[in-house]
Amino acid sequence: MQPDNQEMSQVERSAIAKVSKRLVPFIALMFFINFLDRTAISFAGPNGMTTDLALTAAQFGFAAGIFFFGYIVLEIPSNLALHKYGARRWLARIMVSWGIVALLFTWVSSATELYVLRFLLGVAEAGFFPGAILFLSMWVPARHRRKILALFYLAQPLTTVIGAPFAAMLIQMHGLFGLEGWRVMFFGVAVPAVVIGIITWFYLADRPNDAKWLTQAEKDWLNRELAGEEKAKAAAHGKMTGLALTDGRVWLLSVIYFGLIYGLYALAFFLPTIIGGFETKFGTKFDVFDKGLITAIPYLPAAVVLFFWSRDASKRGVRPWHIGIPALVGAFSIPAALYMGSPEATIAMITLTACAIFAALPNFWAIPSRFLAGPAAAAGIALINTIGNIAGFAAPYVTGLIKDATGVYELPMFIVGGLMLLSALLAFSLNGRVREPELVVAGSKG
Image (cartoon, rainbow, N blue to C red; front, side, top):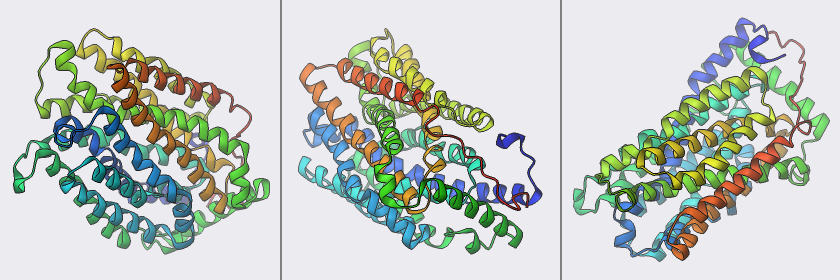
């Protein structure tokens, strides 16, 4: 029986509504700032940074990608620390740390310094995304989790919808404090991370029992539901961290995620550069703010598609095709974009790619929590995200390296398409391997 068809008690309805309103927007805001800070280099690159620091496409791609080396180093330990010390303290610590490092980009003066700071930014951010996923999973029972994760994931495409024009506006403040526009942009996107990180310490609660904004009945219902799910998953699959790291399903999901993230970051880091090349390819002229608006175009439809595709998954339960079909669409649309005959057609095809990637991602993250519990969930989710972050390094670096070697983006985009095709095929193979949990918890009607 699917969530939308289940009779919900008043306590269940009010508890989920409060969690949705109190926690999800705030965690989504944190994610918004997180994704903006890690992709700010994509806006800086074509707007003065690559020229000022004399970067080749490969050097730019390496600088974008080395972030993920730092991230990978501390990914699993950071998520286990969050599980041990609590999300409130650990997520606040992560945000303040990355905000301080992000601020230092304002004064970067060489390619080497850029590499070092990008690596340190990855170290500082390590564990944030899987920690946020784990945190929400610890607050919301399985039958409501897809909807919650979809609302959370809306922050990622909206980061570019809002963030690209915002970054462009900051870049146009060239000369503020005597800084180049791209340096002003780095300063402007770093400060919110420190501010929100401090607020996080006081705003979040680690568990329902700590939430003063829940009634006792709501706390009891959430605790009963979540404890019953943890017990059922632990009995069926175990809670040991080692079991998660050797589970074939975890590794299969890791490969699927690799292809999806490869497409996401190839698009995120090089879309502003591709748009910057419209002048040479099509003879069009855009100012910095125009380019920011054009960069944002694919992500607004992506947010809409994400919402409705995830809503369908919430009604039916996530099926392999909720991941496989979007991945298949992205596999063909992203290389096709570079063969379009006008800026409008190119952006339309890139929009299709963005819609595909963001339709797949939130539904993907509903799957690991079906069979992972406790520390195994922390380790398994972190491992999947770690493998995805290897793609985060490979996508910009390989794209830039091949662009330098060939002078065009066609071949690297075919590589993106091939990896997304692999993700699609493996997603379809999930059928029967990871089943929807059917948990019956005593007193679950409230």
